[in-house]
Image (cartoon, rainbow, N blue to C red; front, side):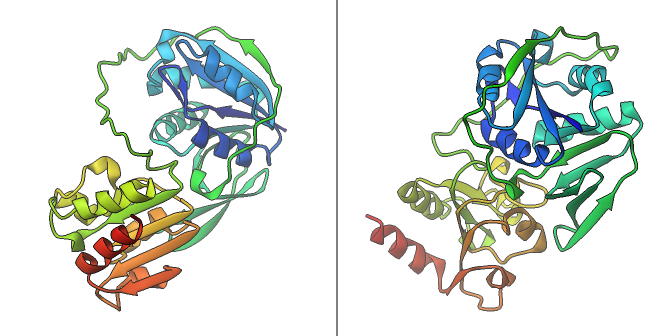
Length: 309
């Protein structure tokens, strides 16, 4: 069986983490060709060719795809779809934007957030904020899906796939990219960091959220936040972890002052080791934590930070 994986490439830069994890899922379905579409994406295509499991890289080097706008990207993917049984996207903001449009144009359903591949037509995905796991079987001739990257490991380097240049295709939908505002940070990126320190409503204020930042700096960690903390203005919304935020699965997740609403748990419960600090011993976060500390965070976090000096 043949699989087309759409790589996450923005402004010529490859998001290797999300793409390599989606590749791990895709290789379970058959031979994988990877679409690399952006302007100036030659280096990204070469990087993709070096991943184990890639059969061929299709490189569409064109300004129309520089910002992964859904309409031209969908037109390109649909133009290639005839040769493929499975069309796979990482479940990133970009992938979630393009995949439903591709599925609609192909008149098939989209299978979102795949966390396990059981067969060519059978997939496992979470529903109800991760409180239930659903097995989906499809009879569609073409399967369009997004892969929950937190559920898969990175594909290894060491491949030597061929790179084929392909032309851009016309897009009938009149859209144009205008601008993109991205918050810059020197800290590790949330979805790819191996250590995350997250704060919740219990932190109390934006000023006190500096406790979280200081601890994260000592650990070389990314900073996360619950929706309650974001809504209260303690942290920017690009740090939100949860069902309506980012899905993460680091080696270590430290939850500080987070009660553990199901929407937040849906975004972090696949973390390898979960540490929870909360003064409420009945907080739901302790049900998923590997290590729980019932304590006042304003005492515990400074002590942890000092111990790391």
